[in-house]
Image 1 (cartoon, rainbow, N blue to C red):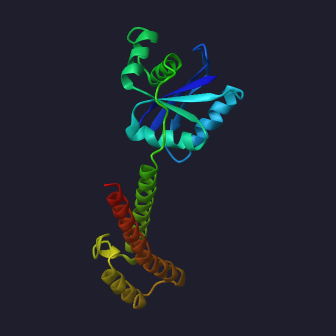
Image 2 (image 1 turned 180 degrees about the vertical axis):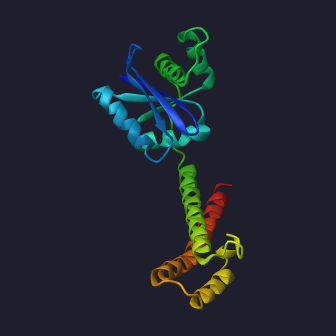
Image 3 (image 1 turned 135 degrees about the horizontal axis):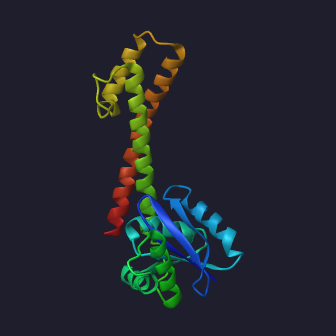
Amino acid sequence: MVTVGIDPHKRVHVAVAVDVRGNRIGKPLTVRNDGRLIIALLTWIRSIADGTSVTWAVEDGRGFARRLADGLLLAGQEVVWVPSRLAAAHRKLHAATGSKSDAIDAVAAAYAVIATPDLARHRIDERIRELRALTDYRCDLVKRRTMMINQLKAHSHLWLDYTPGDLARAKALVLLTARLQTTQVGTHVRHVLTEMITEVPQVNQRIHDLDAMIKGHCQVGD
């Protein structure tokens, strides 16, 4: 059996694998906390675990480690939460005096799971998972709308005329459409601007629909 200790952080996670005797195997992995996180972790551990079953020990920083734990669990992995105090105790027990690093913290989490096999396994709360999917998608749509509005402002030379919030409103888009019809621009520029002017209200409606879904989801759980 292989146990992977993970020291989670906001931007990167540090993972260290140890065997059943507590010996490190392979090299530690520092991986970005982005959309390829789970693929990177699984590719790494498969290259050194040689088909052995794997348990992932994550120090209890559930704020930004929950997405990591969910991803591993959905990929069919066993994930264990390690209380911070227990990880600290193993870090103090096994690390050299005064030494401190992310890799040492990850190893301490792995040692804690090996020494305490009855620690809580991670489980996904389906309500929270659904809410996270809704809010993440809404966030992506808002970013998409902001990007389109900034492009509209840049290509229409409207930096001083409108704020991004103005161009998210139907009235401003109608005025911009009228202005576009009387402005000399190239065919392709006109096509792109028209496409974005058409898409912004559609994105607005999708954001509005998601707001209603998020509100209804929260009320059901009250």
